[in-house]
Image 1 (cartoon, rainbow, N blue to C red):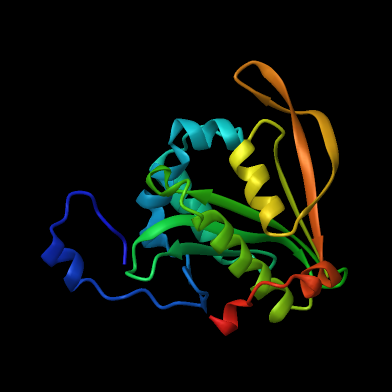
Image 2: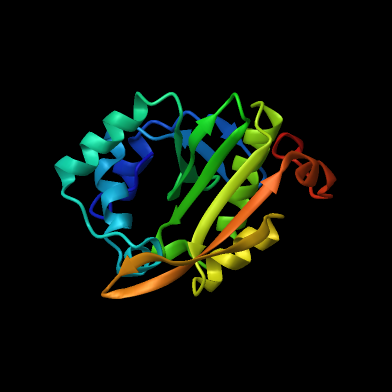
Length: 200
């Protein structure tokens, strides 16, 4: 269910529940659909997200075309992050999947209104459990600005290991930014003591 800020509670209640592809303790993952275009564009247009991701707002048409293109990409899986009541709070993805080498990249973006509540860690843990529990992946990687403290904390809490820094790897707002590189290997995930998504 996509929450429209202009819709009433009755209208939202009448919308069908999203089909979850993956469940975890505090969040669920549902496949991104073209109907999610406006929602994803609003998150990408948020100034904090734009700064942290080094992006700028895209047109609605461009965002829709990107969702359509990505849905046909066998090397990528995009999900909405949903609270138990169906509220969409973010976007998470496994991208650049290489099943031969067993590698993929993780991407995460949260609705500004839902930051700081632990949802990022819950969503990342759920995606990691999907990657290692259901797919033959061995290595996940993630990158973020070295000054993006919330993202650094989420990655560390989910067990990702900081491998190093790509110096001056990102140009944003006229300045070069260093990018921290993280990874998580299957044996490291297996050693984590937290409950798995399927145990929730």
